[in-house]
Image (tube, rainbow, N blue to C red; front, side, top):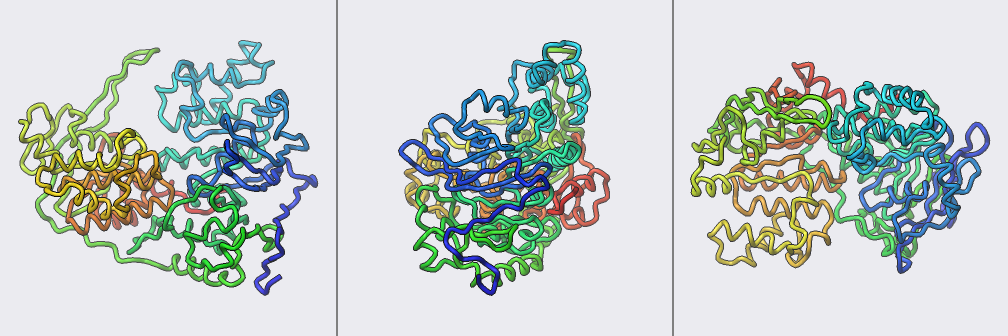
Length: 625
């Protein structure tokens, strides 16, 4: 053992602390998942969890988190094979008969997926979903089933009348509550929640996380929370397990990991998470991307992205070495760099940048005046309903400034963006874009439409849906440049665009399927700036990305905006992103503009109760239990 207290014996592994009954309810040992052709996806993963404990599994996309969860409950995609040992309360789950798995799955172990649409049948009512999930003896008695359905809905904060609705009639938060009620319907002893709040706005995320904690504590249920958001994991979990490229690289109690990470990758995740309480001059990210697990079996998987790599890091795969009985790390150089890791984490806590000054009161790029929009929906059950999306909203985006639009789902943010882009026609109000009234695109001449398209471009939320999967990147950019009309060297301009967004020129020959989420979003940005717009609308541009890719994209948008002097309308529910990306912010609540002002003033000294609610809902990294 070194002076640092790090065990360096080859093959040493963390032995989990034993719970009150002398054994772990869930124990996973040497779990390995392979694809056809013996391609490694997850390698030699251990984890253990006792009743009533909470464990967070964190890491970027491609780290193997979700595959590990699915292997535990026996729901791996077809073609994948898992080896090792998975036991629950002494019952072997891995490699056992499906009948045995069914007797455990749902009743003792349950899985809550990221997207409730994947768990809910759009043709069934909420009540039908819950009845299907109840124990068989309850399902047989119609009266008991109805009573139990109402009780289960109440447990997740939903009223009885929700039982007659269909999934499409519910908000994202309500659908996730229904999915949670279904997952808990057989009173499982352990719940595995796979990214349950990733697609939710900040207030709904807060409500769902609080609900998970309340249910877990009330039932003394075990909880495994899979997430890429360390703030969420720190707020909910007692222990954290960090995964990278199919392997566990660190295990630690929450507070120890938050204060002093013991692996460079854990530090990278911490530093990439932007703060909500102050501005940073430079957003830190982890360079590169997660490699496939089967390409790094004989070395440290993080070596190519690490600042401390030495020959010993690529000579052999570092084992998961014991630091204390409750903590371990798979860094071969931990004894040498642990002090540097702690110092860098401490420096990041102290780093406070100088936020940009609000733009001078120059001519606005776009002015919105008394914009209103209502939607009428006809449900399958009940009367037609009218929803007010916008209620006389007015604001302007000035030359050269970035204005943030914030608010929870349904506040009207995206309706404003769609109105500016001509994808939605407001009921009343004006939208002035450089002297052109664009509230109704039908009234524009062809020349005016072309002029508007040149002035306004957009980066959408989902990088996977915003690119044509059948077009190579070069063809996608060529189409846009052809519309600009003043490009003499198309291949050269395509290369320049890719270079501006930090991608190699040979990416022009790739299809979107060959790119990561962050790389696809870079291409979407390149396409948007190809027309040299004066206003760039960013509609949740990093909501679907890991924290490191998020930092890279945000830093890229900062650089492009500074270089081009363009204005930006930045739509997001993430107040930490608002702090880093905008000089002014407008807060929307149920279609009305309730507060606006300089970003620092609004976030530090909110005047409206709803703004205070948004700020209070931001995960702080402190356990709320």
